[in-house]
Length: 223
Image (cartoon, rainbow, N blue to C red):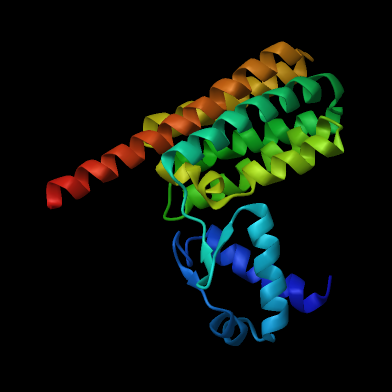
């Protein structure tokens, strides 16, 4: 894949991830080409790649749009995450290296510290550390096929921005799940690690569901 395609892919993907291009945004090839500084051909290839990953959808005769998910689709994604990441945690607990466990402990404690400190961008910083935490677990599971499957349900904007949906209590509970997952890894207890991971993913789903219901109620009240 050419450098121009990689550049276009990375910039469009990042803009979707951070919300510059929110769900439903029409991704026009000519505008993207000017914005990124490449021709339309790599833009087209990048959009196809993002479509294959689920971040972009094509509408016949209308072009590419940032994917907008129904609640039923989001629930399905989190159900899949629970199955896949629960399995990954079970395998990782039995296979991960001492260095990986130490790094997981460091990341879990770093996220706790970031939450305690607060600050204008602390949730984004937690989300970044959280991404590394989950990637280490999947990599430590030692199966390439699982990694490929995980990429399709984890590397989506709605998943990566989950931390922005948590209220303070839910956020602390999520961060404590990380500590318990690490504790299970330290004693090589796959069943424990998998159980906590599944609870962790279920809590993330409920945070998104609760946030969506609150937004719907506010819209109804404003009408």
